[in-house]
Structure formats: structure tokens, C-alpha cells
Image 1 (cartoon, helix red, strand yellow):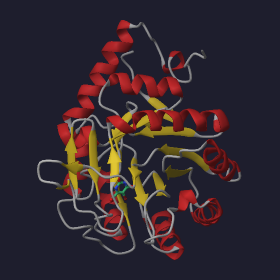
Image 2 (image 1 turned 30 degrees about the vertical axis):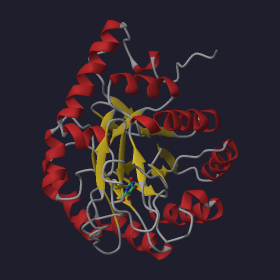
Image 3 (image 1 turned 90 degrees about the vertical axis):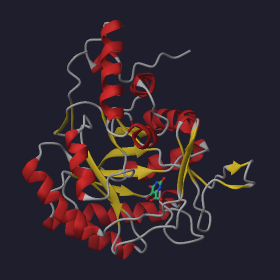
Length: 312
Ligand code: RRO
């Protein structure tokens, strides 16, 4: 397969691989670098009503198989990303996606309205899987609140809606979230999964944690979360196959990961830790590997891969 272009809900991606919100999508310079890379879209850092420095350092580390962060939403504030969206749109021809977070429901209202009325973004990803109010569950673990927030955002946003979900560890929870999504026809994309949080990695030499968390914000990524991500993609496929497009993030290092996730039903993938480690070369490497593999397997189109996981 030489042509990896994929069009979903009228948005064309040159290939299925692009960056997850953070790492390295906070400043204009970083966003412009993403344009120069093989990333098929420019995803911006999750933004909030006010600028944030995030947690103190050290707040990110990677070791073989794991990466852990407690960034806690460093970003320049939503108006900067609206400004960036105009600059990027004028110069570049790639889908531009904003990511939005909240501390109160009112934040979502103000930010969504501003993106709708004054930005040049193609989509907004509503991050329902980020810790917001300390000691309260993230929104996507509170189905009633998730329902209300999605309704509010829907009333302010006139394009397909995109929500970012956390991992679920019980089938009843994927079922409950699927029921919420079914109530909202405008939800067309889900990112699945955000990091596995409430985790801890210890440095045995130093006898201390690897990073400095604030409250309980230890967020785990990479190889070890892949099976969780894969199972979540599959669970949502079973419930929502005719309704939404899944964007998978979590545990991607090679073309094998991309191939497996397309089989399980994802249509697009976002990369995170591998992007931190290899920088923009990660996009071109994985893309090339994917082309080589599909050629070798004589796959001619996505129709021969996506959804094609066989049943045992
Ligand atoms: O900024 C962060 O700490 C962060 C966010 Br908003 C997110 O969605 N996922 C993550 O691992 N870290």
C-alpha cells in the first residue's frame, strides 16, 4: 500500500499517524515542526482557560517499556492556540486539531465557543480524561457529568465532535460510556486511550520515585499499556462500530502496533512516547515500515485491514 491517505468525515489525513496532544505540541515552533514532519495532522497541546506552568520537574521520564508523566497541563492558554490556528492554517495544508480541557464546566463553554467563533481549527478534541478537580473523578469516569458536558459542547460546536477517553477496566464501564456516546450523534471521533493513571515507578538505586507527582498524577504510557488500549478499542468497536471513528493512542512503537490497531478497528493512530524518544523521525520511520509491511503482505487498501481481526 503506497497511498496511505484516509478521509474520515470529510477530513483528509495523508496517512493514519499523527501526534498525540503533548509531547512537543505546545509552542508555535513545535507545531510548525510537526508540519514539516510526516505527521498527518497537527494536534495542539490540551489548553485551558488560563496559561499553566504545570507541575515541577522532574515530571517526565521514560525507561524501557514505560514512560511516566505528571505534566499537569502546561499550556499557553486557549487564546494562544486560537491565534496559532490562524497562522498554521494560512501556511500549511494539514488538519489542525485543538485539544480542550477544563477546571469548571464553564471553562468548556467559554473555550468551545471561542474556538467555534474565532479559530481556524478543523476539529476540537474534548479531553474528558484529564484530572481536573483534585480528588474528583475525571469526567469520563462520571457518566452523568460526561453526558452533560458533551451536550453543552455539542450546542456550541457545529462540526463533528471528538472526545478523548481514559482506559476502562470493566466492560460495564465501556458499555455505560457507549450509551452516553449513542445519545450524541455529533460525536464522531473518540481517542482511546489516554494514559493509565494512578501509577508509580520507583528507582531502586536511588530509592525514590522516578518523577515528582503532585497529588496522584502519575500517568503511564507506552508498551505496557498497549493491551489495555487494544482491548478498549475492541470494546468500543463492538458497541459503536456504525457510529464513530476510533483514534488509537497508547503503546505504539512500530508498524506492527499500527497494523494490530487497524485490525482491531482504529482508523487513525496518535503517537506519544515514541515521539518524545525519536522526535519527528518517529513519524517517517513508522510510516515507511507500514508501507513496506503492507506491500509485503500485498494489502492494497485499508478495506483489507481495518476491522479485519479474525474471531477465534
Ligand atoms: O498534561 C498532562 O499532564 C497530561 C494530559 Br492533559 C493528558 O491528557 N495525558 C497525560 O498523560 N498527561
